Image 1 (cartoon, rainbow, N blue to C red):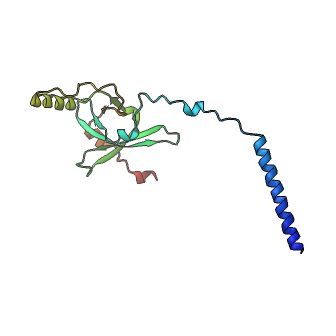
Image 2: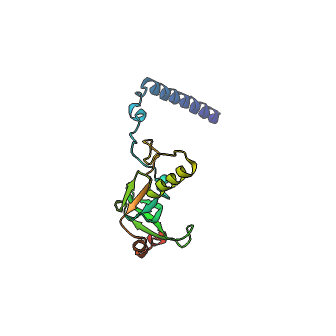
Image 3: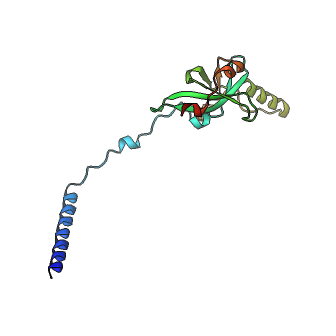
Length: 167
């Protein structure tokens, strides 16, 4: 009998407490959240996607292709710490990876001379006009190529970047 009485009183107490909590929440309704910050569109004009920079060709001042971007390394704050450039090799085999700081690269929006020449050759053979020499103003989220003050031999002479060296 004592167990039934204890169970009944526990259920009654629980019902009273839960209804009191429910009333307390309903009387103090939370203020509507500020949606202006969430609904404002970020200004992302003139930005590039890092995924589009991977594979970007890098040329030297003599317009020789010296490599391409294999990786972008960020520090803990999200700032670009280094860019890993693949130099030499064929289809990724025998490639020499080097890490350089981002400030060593100058990103170019205009197409590289070889791309311009390819379009001119295409125009001459087809007799029709192709894309203009200067890229349109539409944002395709990447530059055309990068330029670096170095030769392929200078990059190959740099210490090879290996992920295992930094673990």
